[in-house]
Image 1: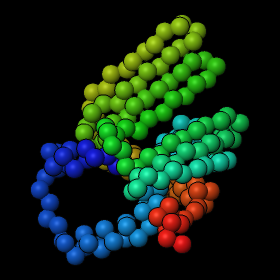
Image 2: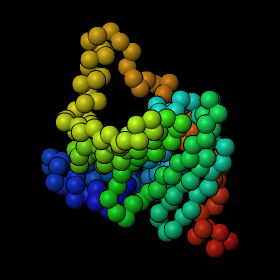
Image 3: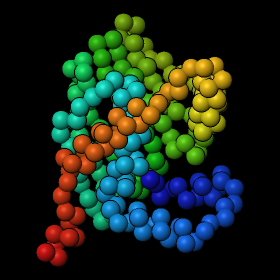
Length: 195
């Protein structure tokens, strides 16, 4: 979540009719356990992306830092192939929001910065090929992530293909969220001060 989200939504989203009773219940639910809410809603995307790029993984260690209402999780995981991976999930971000990854291997390096999808900006991808000692930076045309997701979903159904990601992928990402949540389970700093 970024401080820039409200103005981006105000610029790009149509006017919305909001049921204030529903909104107040939603706000109360999110506030009841902010840590779990933030990790579930932000971590799910990170862990889904990690599984897409690396395959199934096991979180070996995780820590959490809290500063006021801001939370940040850092962890280490291993893949089934024995590779090591690390992750960081921070909410709220007091700057421009991005997701991304860095993958280093024996044949080179791939990095990507994936902007806030509501902005409809293209991802920035760099590929380093060790054999040629050169970088490649692909340029993307259609950058509306939501439109592309709906089109891919419709094409899979119309073509009789399995939908990717599927429900199993969602459950696996949620299992990782649960593991990280368990590894970082502790009282919030304000609660410990009052004890």
